[in-house]
Amino acid sequence: MKKFALALIPMALMLTLALAACGKPAAGGGPNATSTGGGAAECPASQTINLSQVDFAEKCVTVSANQVVTFNDPSSTGGFHIICAGANGTCQADANAPKELAAPGFQIQPGEQKQVTFTNTGTFKLACTVHPAMNMTVVVK
Image (cartoon, rainbow, N blue to C red; front, side, top):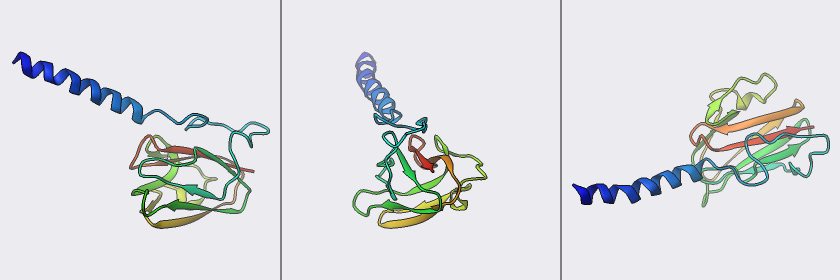
């Protein structure tokens, strides 16, 4: 019984470390990133949002009102996602967000692209309901 208990300790430690790393946002952004007056340095301009297997490649982007944004899920490195306005895996009502991002959001799979037009100005939090740690911000000016 002692050997079994000793074998479980390293496994529990590895699992704890792995789970802690999953929730850590990348440096320079994250789900709570906000736009300030000249926030272009914080949120670079981009018309494309790339997805990986479990995250957004960009944590924050800036677009112009009425601009089409392409969500790109590469065939070789992408994953199945359901993207919506929200945070931490949960869709949240946002009347100003594009209709495609209203609950339950839109599905995208590896090799697919989805175009969404952001017509209203503001800061929009996006989430993936499949991957709760997958969050990003779109600033529309």
